[in-house]
Length: 97
Image (cartoon, rainbow, N blue to C red; front, side, top):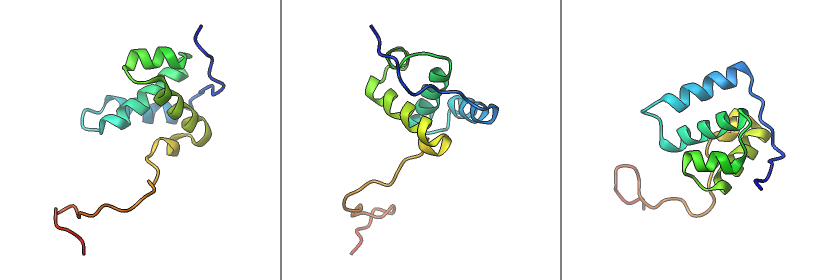
């Protein structure tokens, strides 16, 4: 039996418009499109397993973005700074010394 997420998504009209626009963009990064689609499907009442199946993505990823959106709304869908050592190459491909 599928688990029910405690993070129920109810979208405002503005959030729905932003997410639908992002989900339809062919020029957007794939990660942004998938995140938008996850939230739109969650708002329709689908559980995480159903969303994961429809989008061919792991359930844990669906759960992560659903929770982040619930807690932070639209800003929660943006990448957060990563820890660790910064990259050793600049965008031009030359080593930073």
